[in-house]
Amino acid sequence: MAQGQIQDIVLRLCAQAIKEAEPYILDYSETSIAVLDKVLHRHQKELQAHAHKDEETWQLTSMYGAYIGTMLLSNGLSQCGYAWKLTKENLLVLQSDARSLSPLAKVYHCLCNAEKIEAFYHGALALAREEGTKQGRL
Image (cartoon, rainbow, N blue to C red; front, side):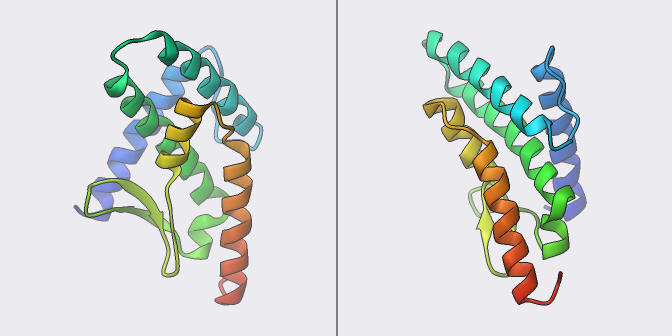
């Protein structure tokens, strides 16, 4: 799949995430990370009540994973050489020459285990900046 097609899919998923998060507002700002934690917690509680939740969990994982990944790219990862890629298994990941990060996997863990997304976000940015500095990109 071409990079443009991947980007179109990601943008559609982000739009769905923003709509699904209502009444919370996701606006790609730093403050929306804390809001995203609230949204994921709300969905995690809702999923616990459903018997057949696999499809819904995957939809939420895809939408919010695309959203947090796009935030990471716009806040520093793209300058460090990261971009959206599809794995052999057709999973979206953020890939650089040196590393692969999976925002979708982290969102999945947040939905299933009530983990927080904020630490992942800040950790991924710090890691990318360190890599970028070593490679002379920053």
